[in-house]
Image 1 (spheres, rainbow, N blue to C red):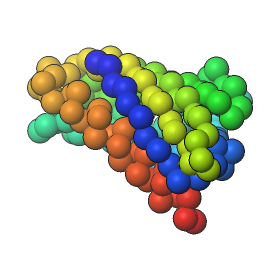
Image 2 (tube, helix red, strand yellow; image 1 turned 120 degrees about the vertical axis):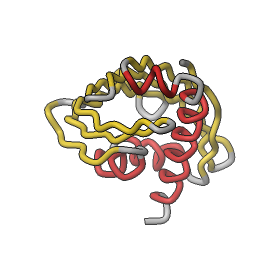
Image 3 (cartoon, one colour; image 1 turned 180 degrees about the vertical axis):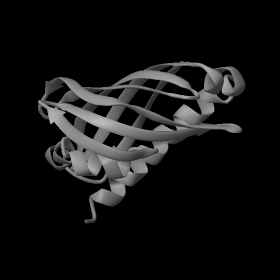
Image 4 (spheres, one colour; image 1 turned 135 degrees about the horizontal axis):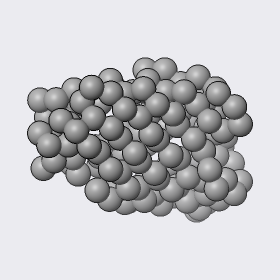
Length: 145
C-alpha cells in the first residue's frame, strides 16, 4: 500500500525539522503511538495501537530514523507485530521552505499481514491517508507550544 501527498506547515523549515527530530513530539503527533522510548542512535522502542475497520491491534516494535539530511529530508521506518498481524512501513519526508512556510512532500509504503490485513484490506489505503493527515495536523499543533 502506497501513500503520498503534500502538507504545508506555517513555520520555517528549521523549526519543522527540529520538531520532526524530537522523540517527544513524534510520540505525541504519530497516530496510535502509546510509547516511544529511545533504544540507541535514532532507534526507538514503540507501542502502537492501530484499528482498521472492526479489527484493532496493539503492536510492539521499533521506529527508526534513517537517511537524514538536515533540514531537507529524512526517512521513518516502523516495524512491529502483535496478535492482529505485523506492520512494516517506511516513509520519506522532504522539506522545502517557501515564503516562511514549510512544504512537506511525503511518500510512504506499508505492508500489513495477518487478521488486520485480511479484514481491513479495502480500508487500509483510506486509513493510511487519514493517519498521515492526523500526523501533520498534530505537528501543526506542536508549533504553537
